[in-house]
Image 1 (cartoon, rainbow, N blue to C red):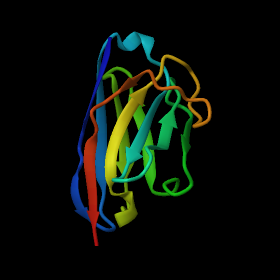
Image 2 (cartoon, one colour; image 1 turned 135 degrees about the horizontal axis):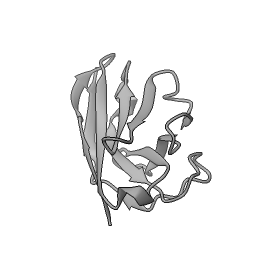
Image 3 (cartoon, helix red, strand yellow; image 1 turned 180 degrees about the horizontal axis):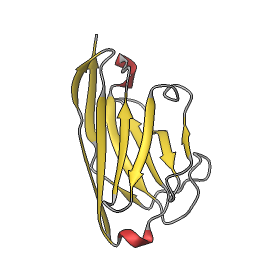
Image 4 (tube, rainbow, N blue to C red; image 1 turned 120 degrees about the vertical axis):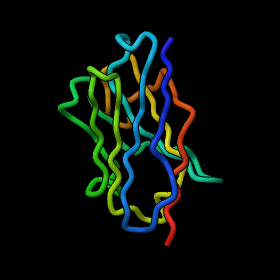
Amino acid sequence: QVQLVESGGGLVQAGGSLRLSCAASGRTASTRAMAWFRQAPGKEREFVAAISWTGITSYYIDSVKDRFTISRDNAKNTVYLQMNSLKPEDTAVYYCAASIGYYYTPALFSPNFWGQGTQVTVSS
């Protein structure tokens, strides 16, 4: 119904930047809030950031709040995660998620669709 494809991951040095993209296709009109999650080896998948369907409001976990920016371009059906001042602890597979609901806070965001993930590796 909805397909999500992430891109933009790679290997960067600590302090560097990456911009992740999530391109949505299919029945994109049914999606509202969008979010980024990440999962490091041996760890649970964690919520990173989310954005409302309007793109006006967003939510970040504390560890990335001053460094990451989530944005969206609904005309392009694309969500971005600008990642600055990257740290080794940011290393993970980053997943894009879409919800048919409007909630974008981590307690209420309910993903209906997932991307395959893109690897982000931060070296020091």
